[in-house]
Length: 459
Image 1 (spheres, rainbow, N blue to C red):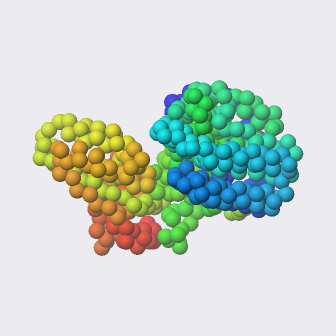
Image 2 (cartoon, rainbow, N blue to C red; image 1 turned 60 degrees about the vertical axis):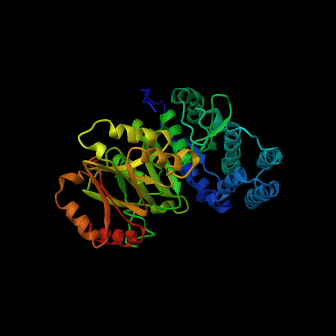
Image 3 (cartoon, rainbow, N blue to C red; image 1 turned 180 degrees about the horizontal axis):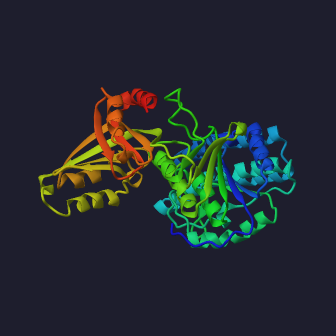
């Protein structure tokens, strides 16, 4: 996304995003509404689907039997109806939900298309119903406190390209589309919209992929020149490491954009890496807090945190694959790396870490975050191509551990301390130098938790 100069904003506005667990039931949504009602600045609300709904919608899109699709749809409808009954929503919401549910049923009972593009369009349309329904529920509960609260369709304000399932925003068009939205916020309108969902060039519904709701919220914040993006989730901010792994993990009061980007990239689940990009480019502060416990505070992500410690946090990402490519053709030769990465690019494989020797290259691949054209990350066809010009070795069952901080390479005692704490675990790769903010290494999945606990206690 290119950065377009933005004019001085007329009034301070904010964007607040609430995740699936924050939308789990009527009480959870009421807690979110209470947060918004306490805000002094005009705030656009962006919501995810209610917890568990998107997984059912994915299952519907993949199911080959009408009976199974109808069963899953019934579960979704019952869930929404239960929340609506719990919250005593108005007729406006009830009718909107009925229309959305009927549209979903109509898609389910219709014959499945045969072309690939039609199937992808169908999938995105099906997945959009989670956010479209949850936003109606949020608006209805909000109207119990603010009678003018309304639900607006994100597809009218978030134009994208036509890459279904992983759409990218049309940034120039989005800035123009969001001007009326910004004006309405500044005029005092109370509005909630959907995360994850956009509209392609031909008007078809698109989705933004993994982390899409956070990404949507950040895009709206940038397009409307918001001062702050508040991401409300089920944890009280970003922790020094995963508290499920290490009981001593503690929340961070502040963190820089660079550190947050590293944490998100290397496994912190609170934020998705791409969600930070619009905020970083436009200097928008990001706050992460617990929607049910806002009094606990949270983590402020900004360009200028007060403190910049040498070590801030630890991140870990499981299910990593180490791909080692060995060829004597690399010896004093040119073009080998280009040939290797051309193959990986053609199979849509994202590479994380890279280390090289004179005749070998070792790279890490994320099994969850990188799927080669919808196939497994190590597609057979891709491996066949690589084996035509190199020997290929694959190791799976690995965890990437990242030490995140500031100017890590400038402190001589950090690397020895990390390696000493990791002992006696076998380290399969070490990567440092490309960034001043991380030191990364690979260990066996079974050793990962123990290594993280030792590192956290030592560092």
